[in-house]
Every structure is written in structure tokens, then in C-alpha cells.
Length: 287
Image (cartoon, rainbow, N blue to C red; front, top):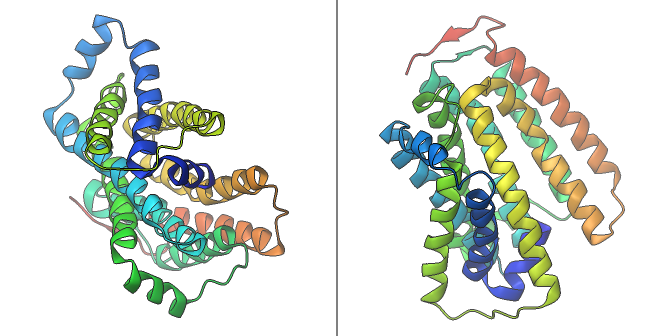
């Protein structure tokens, strides 16, 4: 989030997104995507996966960059990041109706504890209050709404990928990444943005583009071939890892709240796992 915010400040949200996904799209096509067999395998995937999950993938990326770029202050950037980090919890919760997973009484408190841990980790004891959050939301509803919509899109994408393309050897991220780049390039072309290119901006775009290629390719494989519940609950650690990277990038010493948040995340993850795996009077939900 820290690197994305820095890049959007220099280039504008759409140009920043276009730069990042141009890098990741080129990597997707260049590293193994030049083989005809690869594209034939991708295009044989079910239409609901290619069209539905592809649309959710593109929507998530566009909404996220617009939300981060639309933040008017660093405080709003922090709160928008928190809303985006609802996706791990949403992924686990939505697996119940979408994938017919079992749930038990430990899931709700596990989710609440994990959310509390996320708040502590991301805010680092900063001045985040419900009143301040609602004030910022009402003054900038577009950015906050896009962050929340982005989180929902990614949770839906994750579950529907498993539902529509379970066990598939080849996913379609190699296709989704360049399509996202084209959409963002077209959108960036139609608006005026700062576009203050520098060596730092180029390095940030290259870093984020490479990370995007690796992260989303691995996540798609995990959703298609792995246990959605295990992977989803493991992703509770995403805000912690992101915060540690941001602290290192910004050269900030972590506070005590980080470690309390880490403990809450671990506890919430264990409770959620126990709740969704069927313990404590589990109930079955079918899609």
C-alpha cells in the first residue's frame, strides 16, 4: 500500500495502475506465455471462469488503484487500506454460501478477533476512530466505496475461481493481467494526471508489476488447486506482512500495537479455522 500510494501520487491512480499492469502483463506473456499450448489450455477453461472471474479480477484492480489514488490524506489512505484488507475475512465467510462449507460457533468471534488484529496492525496505534472514519467516509464516499467494492470483488473472485475451475492445471491470470493493463491504459489515456515520471516512480512500477505477476499467479493457483479455507485463513496474515514491508520501506520503527495485532490475527485465524472446519456444532450450507 505504501509503494502504491507513492506511485499514485507521482503519476495519478490510472497511470500508476497502467504502468504496474503493463509490467505484470509483459511478464505474464513473456515468461511462458508465448507457447501456443499455454494459451490453448487457458482458453479451454470454463466460460464462467474466463468471463466472470476475469471481470472481477479487472474490476478489483481498477477499483483498488482508484480508491488509493482518491484518498485525500494519509489518514484516508490508511482507512482505505483497512477496507481493502477485509477481503481475507470476506473470502472465508463467502465460502460458506458459495462453496457449501461448514461453519460453527467459533467463526463469528474468530472473525471479530482477526478484524481487531488487522486494525491494530495496519493503524499502528494511530488516531483511527469510528467517528473519524465516518467523517472521512462521508466527505469522500467514492474512494471508500471503491475500496469496499474492491474487497468484495476479490473475495468473490477467489471463491468463484475454485468453483468454476477446480483443479485446473493452468489458470487464466496470464490473460487477466494484460487485459487489465489495456483497460487501465485506455482509462489513463482519457484523463489528465500528473505523470511525473522519475527513476523512483519507474522503480516502484517495476517492483509492483513484478510482485503483482508473482502474487496473483500464485493466488489463482492456490484458489484453483488448494483448500480455500486454509488458504483464506492463512491470508489473514496479509495485512501484517504488508505493514512490515511498509514500515521497512518508510523506515518506521514498529510499535507495541503491531505485536498485539499479530497475536490477535493468529488467535482469530485459529478460531476461524476451528469454526469453518466444522467444530462446535457445525452447520452445513450448500450453494
